[in-house]
Length: 68
Image (tube, rainbow, N blue to C red; front, top):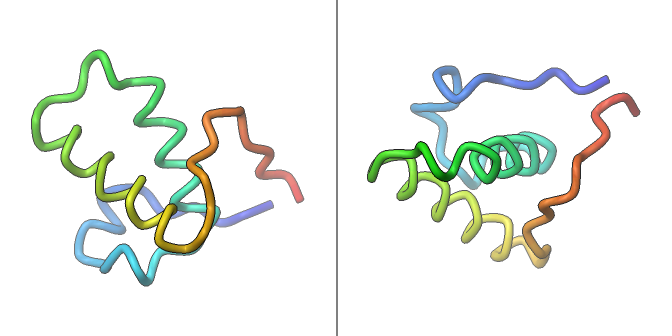
């Protein structure tokens, strides 16, 4: 199982330093909460999507398995 850091823990960490499973998890969570995100949340979500894409992946909206 992955050890996920919360958004508060990742706040001062550059997105380039996030692990892929952290990007995937927080993207999925923010996608689910998107109707309720404020402008700052929407901006952070877009940054996460851009980082996922810069790593050569497509943002995945399917439920991720974090039990490996």
